[in-house]
Length: 91
Image 1 (cartoon, rainbow, N blue to C red):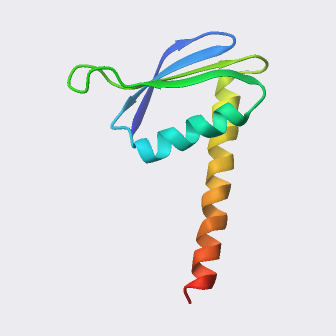
Image 2: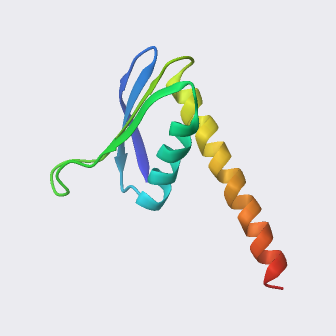
């Protein structure tokens, strides 16, 4: 998966995603929407053969890049915890 910033404003960012993995993107969006500082988080797919998907994040407060990083770290923590639980249970 490769990322390319298309637009960057004070409180919004648009990121083009090449080779996206929807099993990563949709949980990321859900985590972003839990953040009270995020006003909008959406993922536009467009035409599958013509367009690359775009992630759009607009914040009410703070930088959108920081909100994305925070959401990604929260997800990583959730997956680490799930891995520990599975490893402990499946010994």
